[in-house]
Length: 432
Image (cartoon, rainbow, N blue to C red; front, side, top):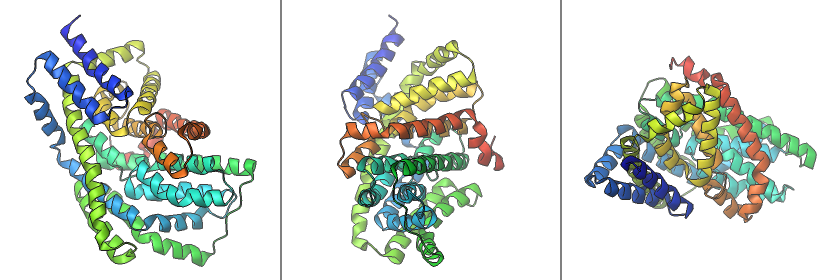
């Protein structure tokens, strides 16, 4: 057997084996990279050099700023304000609390850019309220988890920034704009399903909100929502770069949280910084080792072999996209989102561009695929959070998620095969 073939089996086999054994992904990437490097007789300095190269990217400065801004906003009472606003918009209809959950998740996702932060913040408030108002615990939890995927789609999503970095040269502004319509479609699809289930299960009608109450809720949440405008409008209009927008959003979030809303003391900043640092350290170490792992993939010509295998099966764009969707959905069940982006983007992006798929379009397809993966066992991080909040066993919760999986897959098919849904806003900006 050729040296490269054994090395490929060693690199990918050790990695997947360790992941299946529930070894943390960072260690799985590190061990497989080191073992393959030693087998090939390459100097270990190559690992260090490619780790440094992987994280020595200026635009990655946006990640710590967005993580910190999101943590400050979610800790500072923003969730309650956004829930009040969502209730004023959709809360009065039958099954309104479920729809409030979806709309509030869209608003909060635009601040945190994280499915897990969205699910934990909204879920800890709304799941008990929904249960108290006659919703089953399973339905309340699955609505919350499904709606949290919007946080990955709408800007500012740090996972989209990771994709832009790994893809090389993809416009962050175009990715941000490309995710807005699919994120809204996902929210609308979930609300339609909630409305249907509300009729079938006779869920309660929400309380009516007067115009003055609605305006009050809007005023209370306006400063929080302005954070999204700073990022999206600033970047899209070219007023400042993505990195500058993240820094400005971070300073703005600090002022609003501690000097305007003032629901938490300034001393809580120590905890927020600590939590942000933990998250950031995991992300940056993962990016570093993924850089070395990706270099080995390129050295062993894995992207070329993958391209020949998939395109050897079919050159039809729709068939290729279907195969890649299946691959991403399966990987999403086994791994967390960030490592899949970092490892699979260099392999899959050349394949889809070869059949005529825009990299921005593919980025959004990947986000939704991996967002669904966060809700699937055995590694779904957001699913674990939902189980912990609701105290419902994972198996029971997964069974309740089945119809929501169906809704999300239908949206995935829509954005995969109707690219104008994704590319409409980027094209308005002149993206190619």
